[in-house]
Structures are given as structure tokens and as C-alpha cells.
Length: 132
Image 1 (cartoon, rainbow, N blue to C red):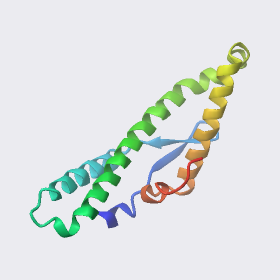
Image 2: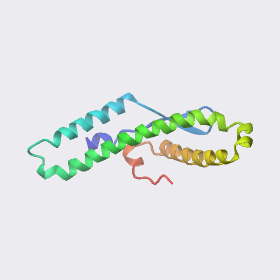
Image 3: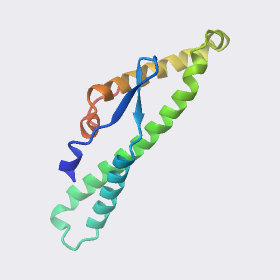
Image 4: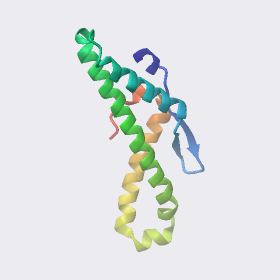
């Protein structure tokens, strides 16, 4: 399973003319992740697991964390897609200066993360990069 994840990459594509990228939620990656979680959980019930117990537990933790991060990532992306056209408006920026400033800070981080994913799309490689 570990070797198989060495080649798995995030699918990202440019989003309109915004200068940023969008993560495509691939069903094949989601299915692979689910399958590997189930397989790893099944290993925890094996009577022969003692020698590999720490490795199995670490791998299960990484898979679940990856699943949680991708799920939250999709939620953040959905929110960004909703807010981007709103805060791109000069009227909104003038009417809500504090909120606009907060949005701009968040958007700067979002764009940085998405650039990193575009440059290094491997799922396992990205997990070790500092995001901020």
C-alpha cells in the first residue's frame, strides 16, 4: 500500500482567470483511500500483527488523516468558490473593509497552498511540506 501511494497525485486545474487552482475530487483516489483504510483496519485484527503493530497503526493514522484533510480541503474550496466573486467586488470591499481584509489574508494562504499542490502534486510529498 505504501508503494502504491508513492505515485498518487492530486488533480489540480487552473480556475478561470483567477491565477489559482482547484482540486478535483477524484473518485478513484477516494476509493483507493477507502479500500486501504478498510484493509489496514482488517490487519489490526490479525493474530500475526504483533511484529507490525506500530507500522500498521501509523499507516492507519496517515490514511485517516489524509482522508480528513481532503474532506476539509474540499469544504474550504467550496467556501472559497462562493466567497471569491463576492469579495472581488469593489463595492463589497468598501462596504466591508474588515471582512475584506480577513478574506484577502485567507485567500493569500489559499493561493499559496494551491500553488504548492500544483508544483508538488504527490499526495505523500505534500503531507510533509509546511503550509505557512
